[in-house]
Image (cartoon, rainbow over all chains, first blue to last red; front, side, top):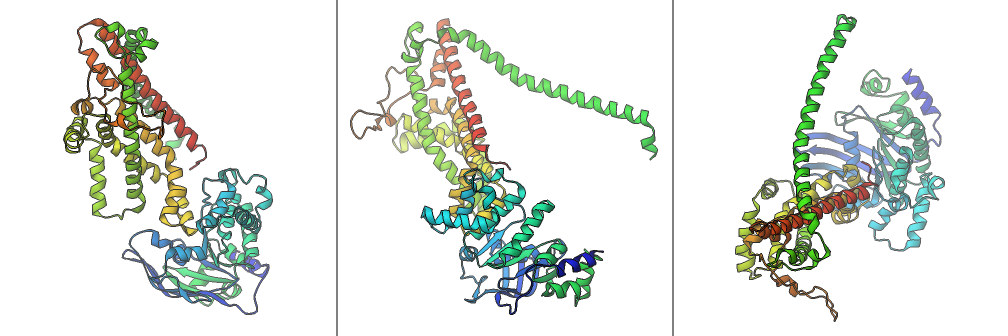
Length: 273
Length: 308
């Protein structure tokens, strides 16, 4: 049953397929350690420009850990260590190089978290914060960019009359779209989503998924999801991870309909996980 | 299944279990009453003795050998000025130290030792702070028996309270907020200045005020550094009519504070002075309660927008 639903989702996906997919980022032999524990081992994966790449796998397989390597979130905590590279194109910078400042990396790649985490500030200030961090002082520029970001996140019409209200007054789904707007306001090269709908109800989830499909025209998207249907619905490429290893990576239609690996097949058909 | 069938037995069991709820609730209320009633009795007793003495003159008169003319002017002015020094010193030091320990300090054994010591400092008897201040501020630094020495002493005394309150307020900020700010490319200082400090300010302010409420009632360290018990003049005014309008001579002025004035009066044999002491005590308790009330109000106001 699950397999049928997934193939239907894969086939009915909107905005499918690009003629030639250009690499935007590439993980090469990426390993990651929490202290002595090896959470990721030797991952190789290409993220294509203006595509949605989904990371799926059972809980604890390292998909969030992998995602958080891209914007060096692990640097916030002591005892974490990377091995290997994540190259960002076109400038071919290794994001994990010791000489690269994690703050520079986070200015280029934005992240949307699992639980909506708006700041206890006004709706406007939430979206404007990334611009303020970048030293933008002009009120006009900030106001313009905030509006563009809120429109891109399909939230403008709902909040345009109450931009000064505290963001906590929004519903969960609106808060998550606000966080997407906050991440978009600074024109990121890649948008990282860490299970963005796991704290939301089905209607809010649908609106976020629709938004993700829309957004890939403007930005490259890497999304972690525990929901296979979601991966099938929104992504162009899917990576299946298990126990810190990349088991299979390929185009979403191919991976869901004709997985090459037995483990992947067991997982997506629901025999495992 | 066999258990569930026997409804009468289950109900009996629940009833007997619930009896313990009642027993505990009663014990709890009794335990609570010991504290509340004792304080109420003391306060009411003091109020009965002292309130008749609370006239305008009582607040505007200097102490006097005649009980009926004695007032607490020098005491409350002294207390207020000492509190100003205490706040100005303890707040930046305490908040800075707390912020550093939570946000910047590497987690290693040095930090652990510092943490343990801060907790220990909160338990050091206040007279020990008095002795330290006598040696350090009064003689070593030559500040003398002044408002400055007293303010610095009390600042040291409440520093651990402010540090601990700051750290707890910071720790109550969800990790998601912090990560959200870092993910936008903020530096540590930007995260502290734009998020950590504003969102923890309610808790920090509460801690500061509770610390100050403790400091205002402290007697031992102030006596140790040599506050006068009888003082019939005010320190020079901090505000002047000529530019630069601020005058810091008051810092080096001799002084007395409310608890010392009270202590002085209680040691007199005449009943009228005991009445004065009760009145001064009443004012002091009101000052403390007002500070605590202000802390509660502030916390309520500042936390209204923080739902986590």
